[in-house]
Length: 369
Image (cartoon, rainbow, N blue to C red; front, side, top):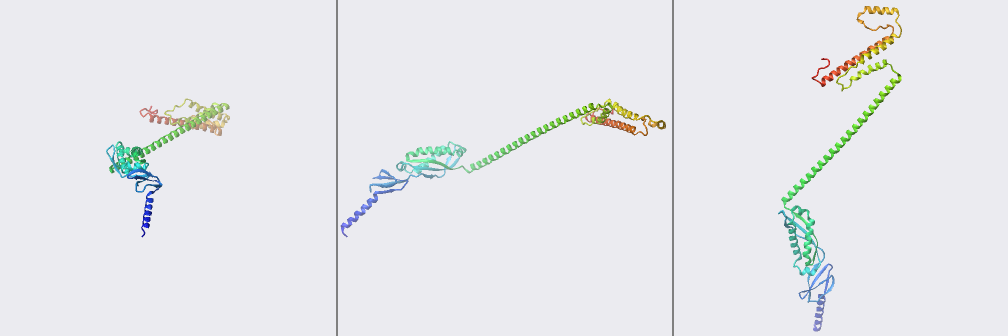
């Protein structure tokens, strides 16, 4: 082969190699750190870039998108000397590719160790209950410490989250028992509160019922007393308007007399002195009516005289005509009124004596005296 051709081919290959070594294409969200003869030169941005072949080389390729790093569970001791395992999740982003490549050897390992030490400092000042209930506070303190420490590394910590806090098994059992006791306590409190409200409502209802019943009884008694007063007033007006004589009033007196002893509150009953006068007035009224019918004939008087002489057992009986129906009715009515009055008086006495003996067992009754 001709040497000239060989030289041309070698030159072409060298040119192609140099051209390929000169051009660098950087993808989006990537950064390339370029070193020239072992010294940092610049950071290539996304797109087409040109470098010096042989003199420049790519040292590190970094991804500037936000990254997620989940650490393994780390044992941490709380203030009350309990060991808990805590898992953390870290969200970070490279803001300075040069510092991330040259300021720290392994930024992920450095961030992990810094997270563990910060967690131990934060959790060491809290008890177990505070650790379980203060995640937001722990996250904020972790982020502040990590962001301050990783800033010089060209890394920005966007967020730190505690993924899990695992206390020992015996502590878990104790926490479950405590939680169950709290639930039972709340249930008992709610049940007692419900019973208290029910009793209060029942008492309020009973109170309203008693008030309404008392008001109804009061209104009924008022209306009943008003009716009785009006009835008495009407009777009084009627008696005075019709100018009733003493005979009618005496008869009504005898008619009302048996009702005086019917009350259960009466312990004794006094027989009024006007009773005999009222009986005498009624008897005299019927007797006068029988006499007003006319004098009996002579034959009838003789028969009556013979009958009185022959029958001595009927001494004191009123003299009436045998054929006078009105006289017989008057006598019968008078006798019946007298009997009713006597029965009412005897019943009233018996009831009064029985009530007195029941209330005063040591006091002698009226019959004994």
